[in-house]
Length: 82
Length: 272
Image: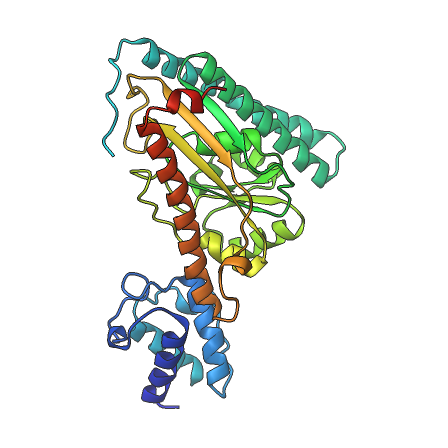
Protein backbone atom coordinates (compact mmCIF):
# COMPACT_ATOMS: atom_id res chain seq x y z
CA UNK A 1 0.00 0.00 0.00
CA UNK A 2 1.42 3.38 -0.97
CA UNK A 3 1.77 6.35 1.38
CA UNK A 4 -0.99 8.17 -0.50
CA UNK A 5 -3.34 5.21 -0.12
CA UNK A 6 -2.62 5.02 3.63
CA UNK A 7 -3.16 8.77 3.89
CA UNK A 8 -6.50 8.43 2.15
CA UNK A 9 -7.57 5.65 4.56
CA UNK A 10 -6.54 7.75 7.57
CA UNK A 11 -8.39 10.80 6.22
CA UNK A 12 -11.57 8.77 5.71
CA UNK A 13 -11.34 7.26 9.22
CA UNK A 14 -10.58 10.60 10.91
CA UNK A 15 -13.48 12.34 9.16
CA UNK A 16 -15.81 9.55 10.19
CA UNK A 17 -14.69 9.32 13.80
CA UNK A 18 -13.94 12.89 14.81
CA UNK A 19 -15.57 16.29 14.58
CA UNK A 20 -12.95 17.79 12.24
CA UNK A 21 -12.99 19.43 8.80
CA UNK A 22 -11.07 17.97 5.86
CA UNK A 23 -9.03 21.20 5.51
CA UNK A 24 -7.57 20.59 8.98
CA UNK A 25 -6.08 17.25 7.94
CA UNK A 26 -2.56 18.27 6.92
CA UNK A 27 0.49 16.18 7.80
CA UNK A 28 1.68 18.91 10.18
CA UNK A 29 -1.64 19.03 12.07
CA UNK A 30 -1.06 18.22 15.74
CA UNK A 31 -3.30 15.36 16.84
CA UNK A 32 -4.04 16.56 20.37
CA UNK A 33 -3.71 20.33 20.18
CA UNK A 34 -5.29 20.96 16.77
CA UNK A 35 -7.47 17.93 16.03
CA UNK A 36 -8.50 17.13 19.62
CA UNK A 37 -7.57 13.47 19.20
CA UNK A 38 -6.31 11.92 22.46
CA UNK A 39 -4.77 8.54 23.27
CA UNK A 40 -8.13 6.74 23.65
CA UNK A 41 -9.27 8.23 20.33
CA UNK A 42 -6.10 6.94 18.69
CA UNK A 43 -7.01 3.38 19.70
CA UNK A 44 -10.46 3.81 18.12
CA UNK A 45 -8.79 5.26 15.03
CA UNK A 46 -6.41 2.29 14.74
CA UNK A 47 -9.25 -0.19 15.21
CA UNK A 48 -11.14 1.57 12.44
CA UNK A 49 -8.04 1.51 10.20
CA UNK A 50 -7.68 -2.21 10.88
CA UNK A 51 -11.09 -2.69 9.30
CA UNK A 52 -10.26 -0.46 6.33
CA UNK A 53 -6.88 -2.02 5.54
CA UNK A 54 -6.69 -5.61 4.31
CA UNK A 55 -3.51 -6.22 6.30
CA UNK A 56 -3.92 -6.29 10.11
CA UNK A 57 -2.01 -3.62 12.05
CA UNK A 58 -0.03 -5.30 14.80
CA UNK A 59 0.57 -2.30 17.05
CA UNK A 60 1.80 -1.72 20.59
CA UNK A 61 1.37 1.51 22.61
CA UNK A 62 5.15 2.11 22.36
CA UNK A 63 4.86 2.58 18.59
CA UNK A 64 2.87 5.76 19.16
CA UNK A 65 4.84 7.24 22.07
CA UNK A 66 6.46 9.96 19.93
CA UNK A 67 3.52 10.54 17.59
CA UNK A 68 2.48 14.20 17.68
CA UNK A 69 1.19 15.01 14.20
CA UNK A 70 -0.91 13.34 11.56
CA UNK A 71 2.30 12.96 9.52
CA UNK A 72 3.96 11.09 12.42
CA UNK A 73 0.97 8.76 12.58
CA UNK A 74 1.20 8.18 8.84
CA UNK A 75 4.93 7.31 9.24
CA UNK A 76 4.22 4.78 12.01
CA UNK A 77 1.41 3.07 10.10
CA UNK A 78 3.54 2.99 6.96
CA UNK A 79 6.28 1.25 8.99
CA UNK A 80 3.82 -1.21 10.52
CA UNK A 81 2.52 -2.17 7.09
CA UNK A 82 5.98 -2.87 5.66
CA UNK B 1 -16.22 35.78 39.05
CA UNK B 2 -14.02 38.01 41.21
CA UNK B 3 -12.23 36.64 44.25
CA UNK B 4 -13.66 37.33 47.67
CA UNK B 5 -12.05 39.84 50.03
CA UNK B 6 -9.30 38.03 51.92
CA UNK B 7 -9.31 38.08 55.71
CA UNK B 8 -6.39 39.86 57.46
CA UNK B 9 -3.53 37.56 58.44
CA UNK B 10 -4.16 38.02 62.16
CA UNK B 11 -7.81 37.03 62.15
CA UNK B 12 -9.95 34.24 63.58
CA UNK B 13 -10.47 32.63 60.16
CA UNK B 14 -6.77 32.45 59.31
CA UNK B 15 -6.16 31.00 62.79
CA UNK B 16 -8.86 28.38 62.04
CA UNK B 17 -7.15 27.54 58.73
CA UNK B 18 -3.81 27.16 60.52
CA UNK B 19 -5.41 24.87 63.12
CA UNK B 20 -6.93 22.77 60.31
CA UNK B 21 -3.56 22.30 58.64
CA UNK B 22 -2.00 21.30 61.98
CA UNK B 23 -4.84 18.83 62.55
CA UNK B 24 -4.27 17.41 59.06
CA UNK B 25 -0.58 17.02 59.84
CA UNK B 26 -1.43 15.18 63.07
CA UNK B 27 -3.92 12.90 61.31
CA UNK B 28 -1.63 12.21 58.36
CA UNK B 29 0.31 9.27 59.90
CA UNK B 30 -2.90 7.52 61.07
CA UNK B 31 -3.80 5.83 57.74
CA UNK B 32 -0.25 4.51 57.38
CA UNK B 33 -0.26 3.15 60.96
CA UNK B 34 -3.66 1.51 60.53
CA UNK B 35 -2.52 0.10 57.18
CA UNK B 36 0.43 -1.55 58.89
CA UNK B 37 -1.89 -3.10 61.51
CA UNK B 38 -4.31 -4.29 58.81
CA UNK B 39 -1.43 -5.74 56.81
CA UNK B 40 -0.36 -7.82 59.81
CA UNK B 41 -3.86 -9.09 60.64
CA UNK B 42 -4.95 -12.34 58.93
CA UNK B 43 -7.48 -10.75 56.59
CA UNK B 44 -8.31 -11.33 52.95
CA UNK B 45 -7.37 -8.64 50.42
CA UNK B 46 -11.02 -7.63 49.89
CA UNK B 47 -11.71 -7.25 53.61
CA UNK B 48 -8.46 -5.32 54.07
CA UNK B 49 -9.40 -2.98 51.22
CA UNK B 50 -12.88 -2.39 52.62
CA UNK B 51 -11.52 -1.60 56.09
CA UNK B 52 -8.87 0.74 54.70
CA UNK B 53 -11.50 2.64 52.71
CA UNK B 54 -13.77 2.79 55.77
CA UNK B 55 -10.88 4.22 57.81
CA UNK B 56 -10.21 6.84 55.09
CA UNK B 57 -13.91 7.73 55.03
CA UNK B 58 -14.00 8.13 58.84
CA UNK B 59 -10.87 10.31 58.84
CA UNK B 60 -12.25 12.50 56.06
CA UNK B 61 -15.52 12.90 57.97
CA UNK B 62 -13.68 13.82 61.18
CA UNK B 63 -11.61 16.36 59.26
CA UNK B 64 -14.69 17.88 57.59
CA UNK B 65 -16.45 18.25 60.95
CA UNK B 66 -13.34 19.57 62.66
CA UNK B 67 -12.88 22.35 60.12
CA UNK B 68 -16.51 23.38 60.53
CA UNK B 69 -16.00 23.35 64.30
CA UNK B 70 -12.95 25.62 63.89
CA UNK B 71 -15.20 28.07 62.04
CA UNK B 72 -13.54 27.72 58.63
CA UNK B 73 -16.82 27.06 56.82
CA UNK B 74 -20.37 25.81 57.12
CA UNK B 75 -21.31 22.88 54.96
CA UNK B 76 -24.42 21.15 53.76
CA UNK B 77 -24.86 17.84 51.96
CA UNK B 78 -27.94 17.53 49.73
CA UNK B 79 -28.87 13.99 48.75
CA UNK B 80 -31.14 14.24 45.74
CA UNK B 81 -30.22 10.62 45.11
CA UNK B 82 -30.27 8.08 47.92
CA UNK B 83 -29.88 4.86 45.92
CA UNK B 84 -26.89 2.59 45.59
CA UNK B 85 -23.58 4.07 44.48
CA UNK B 86 -22.20 0.66 43.50
CA UNK B 87 -20.71 0.52 40.00
CA UNK B 88 -21.22 4.26 39.49
CA UNK B 89 -18.72 6.73 38.05
CA UNK B 90 -18.77 9.61 40.52
CA UNK B 91 -18.11 12.79 38.54
CA UNK B 92 -17.55 16.07 40.35
CA UNK B 93 -16.56 19.62 39.48
CA UNK B 94 -13.44 20.82 41.27
CA UNK B 95 -13.61 24.34 42.73
CA UNK B 96 -11.53 23.84 45.89
CA UNK B 97 -8.88 21.80 47.69
CA UNK B 98 -11.39 19.89 49.85
CA UNK B 99 -13.64 18.43 47.13
CA UNK B 100 -12.17 14.93 47.29
CA UNK B 101 -12.18 15.01 51.11
CA UNK B 102 -15.90 15.88 51.16
CA UNK B 103 -16.81 13.22 48.61
CA UNK B 104 -14.78 10.53 50.38
CA UNK B 105 -16.35 11.57 53.70
CA UNK B 106 -19.94 11.12 52.55
CA UNK B 107 -19.89 8.42 49.86
CA UNK B 108 -18.70 4.97 50.98
CA UNK B 109 -16.32 2.52 49.33
CA UNK B 110 -14.92 4.82 46.66
CA UNK B 111 -12.00 3.94 44.42
CA UNK B 112 -9.94 7.10 43.90
CA UNK B 113 -7.33 7.93 41.30
CA UNK B 114 -4.24 9.19 43.12
CA UNK B 115 -1.68 11.61 41.74
CA UNK B 116 1.57 9.81 40.80
CA UNK B 117 3.51 12.14 43.15
CA UNK B 118 1.75 10.57 46.16
CA UNK B 119 3.24 7.16 45.39
CA UNK B 120 6.74 8.49 46.05
CA UNK B 121 6.03 8.40 49.79
CA UNK B 122 6.42 4.83 51.10
CA UNK B 123 3.66 5.09 53.72
CA UNK B 124 1.15 6.79 51.44
CA UNK B 125 1.94 4.27 48.72
CA UNK B 126 1.21 1.40 51.13
CA UNK B 127 -2.12 2.94 52.14
CA UNK B 128 -3.11 3.63 48.52
CA UNK B 129 -2.31 0.06 47.55
CA UNK B 130 -4.21 -1.37 50.49
CA UNK B 131 -7.23 0.84 49.70
CA UNK B 132 -7.12 -0.41 46.10
CA UNK B 133 -6.76 3.14 44.78
CA UNK B 134 -5.45 3.55 41.25
CA UNK B 135 -2.66 5.84 40.11
CA UNK B 136 -3.08 8.41 37.34
CA UNK B 137 -0.84 7.93 34.33
CA UNK B 138 -0.67 4.14 34.51
CA UNK B 139 -0.91 2.71 30.99
CA UNK B 140 -3.78 0.36 31.82
CA UNK B 141 -5.67 2.83 34.04
CA UNK B 142 -8.84 2.71 31.94
CA UNK B 143 -8.91 -1.10 31.99
CA UNK B 144 -8.38 -1.11 35.77
CA UNK B 145 -11.22 1.36 36.28
CA UNK B 146 -13.57 -0.75 34.14
CA UNK B 147 -12.55 -3.83 36.14
CA UNK B 148 -13.30 -2.05 39.43
CA UNK B 149 -16.71 -0.94 38.16
CA UNK B 150 -17.46 -4.51 37.11
CA UNK B 151 -16.65 -5.57 40.68
CA UNK B 152 -19.30 -3.11 41.89
CA UNK B 153 -16.98 -0.37 43.14
CA UNK B 154 -17.61 3.30 42.46
CA UNK B 155 -14.83 5.29 40.83
CA UNK B 156 -14.29 9.00 41.61
CA UNK B 157 -13.24 11.28 38.74
CA UNK B 158 -12.67 15.01 38.43
CA UNK B 159 -12.92 15.57 34.66
CA UNK B 160 -11.30 18.99 35.00
CA UNK B 161 -8.13 17.27 36.20
CA UNK B 162 -7.25 20.11 38.53
CA UNK B 163 -9.03 22.83 40.51
CA UNK B 164 -10.88 25.27 38.25
CA UNK B 165 -10.44 29.03 38.13
CA UNK B 166 -14.11 29.96 38.07
CA UNK B 167 -17.35 28.02 38.60
CA UNK B 168 -18.66 28.08 35.05
CA UNK B 169 -15.42 27.62 33.12
CA UNK B 170 -15.79 23.86 33.14
CA UNK B 171 -12.97 22.50 31.04
CA UNK B 172 -13.91 18.82 31.17
CA UNK B 173 -11.52 16.31 29.64
CA UNK B 174 -13.09 13.22 28.12
CA UNK B 175 -11.83 10.60 30.61
CA UNK B 176 -15.13 10.26 32.49
CA UNK B 177 -17.10 10.03 29.24
CA UNK B 178 -14.65 7.44 27.89
CA UNK B 179 -15.20 5.36 31.02
CA UNK B 180 -18.99 5.79 30.95
CA UNK B 181 -19.28 4.77 27.28
CA UNK B 182 -16.82 1.88 27.49
CA UNK B 183 -18.10 0.45 30.77
CA UNK B 184 -21.79 1.24 30.16
CA UNK B 185 -21.98 2.39 33.80
CA UNK B 186 -23.98 5.35 35.03
CA UNK B 187 -22.43 8.65 36.06
CA UNK B 188 -23.34 9.97 39.50
CA UNK B 189 -22.87 13.76 39.33
CA UNK B 190 -21.73 15.46 42.52
CA UNK B 191 -21.99 19.24 42.34
CA UNK B 192 -19.57 21.07 44.63
CA UNK B 193 -20.32 24.71 45.47
CA UNK B 194 -18.11 26.94 47.53
CA UNK B 195 -19.15 30.54 48.13
CA UNK B 196 -17.24 32.72 48.34
CA UNK B 197 -14.63 30.67 46.55
CA UNK B 198 -11.83 29.54 48.87
CA UNK B 199 -8.87 27.12 48.99
CA UNK B 200 -8.30 27.65 45.30
CA UNK B 201 -5.35 26.54 43.24
CA UNK B 202 -3.46 29.82 43.23
CA UNK B 203 -4.12 30.66 46.90
CA UNK B 204 -1.91 30.12 49.93
CA UNK B 205 -3.37 28.47 53.02
CA UNK B 206 -3.73 31.81 54.84
CA UNK B 207 -5.66 33.50 52.02
CA UNK B 208 -9.09 32.87 53.49
CA UNK B 209 -12.19 34.92 52.56
CA UNK B 210 -13.18 37.50 55.15
CA UNK B 211 -16.73 36.17 55.23
CA UNK B 212 -17.80 32.69 56.28
CA UNK B 213 -17.30 30.14 53.47
CA UNK B 214 -20.40 28.09 52.67
CA UNK B 215 -19.95 24.72 51.03
CA UNK B 216 -22.72 22.68 49.49
CA UNK B 217 -22.27 19.18 48.09
CA UNK B 218 -25.20 17.88 46.06
CA UNK B 219 -25.40 14.20 45.12
CA UNK B 220 -27.55 14.24 41.99
CA UNK B 221 -29.49 11.39 40.36
CA UNK B 222 -27.37 9.24 38.01
CA UNK B 223 -27.26 9.82 34.27
CA UNK B 224 -26.33 7.23 31.67
CA UNK B 225 -24.57 7.93 28.42
CA UNK B 226 -26.92 5.58 26.54
CA UNK B 227 -29.94 7.68 27.52
CA UNK B 228 -28.33 10.99 26.47
CA UNK B 229 -26.27 10.08 23.44
CA UNK B 230 -27.06 8.22 20.20
CA UNK B 231 -25.33 4.86 20.64
CA UNK B 232 -25.34 4.26 16.86
CA UNK B 233 -22.69 6.91 16.21
CA UNK B 234 -18.97 6.01 16.55
CA UNK B 235 -17.70 5.76 20.14
CA UNK B 236 -15.35 8.68 19.57
CA UNK B 237 -18.34 10.93 18.89
CA UNK B 238 -20.22 9.46 21.87
CA UNK B 239 -17.29 10.44 24.14
CA UNK B 240 -17.51 14.01 22.90
CA UNK B 241 -21.28 14.24 23.05
CA UNK B 242 -21.49 12.83 26.58
CA UNK B 243 -18.75 15.15 27.79
CA UNK B 244 -20.86 18.05 26.48
CA UNK B 245 -23.93 16.63 28.26
CA UNK B 246 -22.01 16.53 31.56
CA UNK B 247 -20.61 20.04 31.14
CA UNK B 248 -24.09 21.38 30.40
CA UNK B 249 -25.50 19.54 33.41
CA UNK B 250 -22.94 21.05 35.80
CA UNK B 251 -23.16 24.50 34.21
CA UNK B 252 -26.95 24.55 34.60
CA UNK B 253 -26.75 23.40 38.22
CA UNK B 254 -24.06 25.91 39.12
CA UNK B 255 -25.82 28.78 37.31
CA UNK B 256 -29.02 28.06 39.21
CA UNK B 257 -27.13 27.97 42.50
CA UNK B 258 -25.34 31.25 41.72
CA UNK B 259 -28.61 32.98 40.75
CA UNK B 260 -30.27 31.84 43.96
CA UNK B 261 -27.37 33.17 45.98
CA UNK B 262 -27.45 36.51 44.14
CA UNK B 263 -31.09 36.86 45.18
CA UNK B 264 -29.92 36.77 48.78
CA UNK B 265 -31.40 33.38 49.61
CA UNK B 266 -28.11 31.84 50.64
CA UNK B 267 -28.69 32.00 54.38
CA UNK B 268 -31.43 29.39 54.28
CA UNK B 269 -29.84 27.25 51.59
CA UNK B 270 -26.83 26.39 53.66
CA UNK B 271 -28.45 25.98 57.06
CA UNK B 272 -27.60 22.45 58.08
